[in-house]
Length: 322
Image: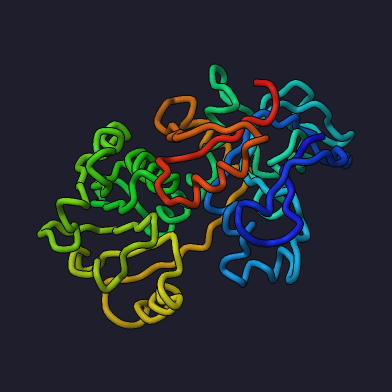
């Protein structure tokens, strides 16, 4: 099968497409013919080994798992003898951070892994980008206990995490203020944001409005800068550890001092999460934003584009026939 490989850490150019052996599923696994995947910030971090800490579980000197890719959508072509939840012919999508392997024509994944059936009427390219940004967004919303009536601000509302956070916060009944550039204000408004701030014309940290929760989905703000727009018991969260890992330290300190808190949420995913997202995809309450689409043969260009820092939502990789 064809797969995108990286034998060493580094820039997008360390990735190349080659023929490799097709995985063989175990008795509790399903073999998925991958039709679509994505290139996202998570893939970029593992490929470049940034931060350096990722090497502690991906390989100190070289990658232990040369085929990256965290998101997938495709069709089950083989099911192990003990598999009961899925059958050959099922259309499935999901998230496979850790084992990876989604940048390939075939993927073996346990039936208990983070996967679910693709909702009727949706194609693999539409659902492949439904899990990476969304699972980060759900983790942040859960950590802040976002619920009905909460005032939530999402900074960086056009990325994979931010665009998912806007929609998923609305599902919970929150009132959402989204921050983005002027060119994409209409897009963000269409995601359900109640109010959109153009950061090129207005500094949200200097405004008079206050929020129960501030989510920085791009890691470009700080607790110090956002504290004045937090309500007395407000919560600040970021998708990044912050400069010198300050958000980790502040999460510990603010638990003990003051009412305004920094919460650092550790991302998690499971099958229940993917099934929940499948429900929202079915109802139309959540739709992943797609920026560009590349074939597997041009995955290096996809990496370059994602690392340029200007993508809107998600970048899809088409792997097999759809």
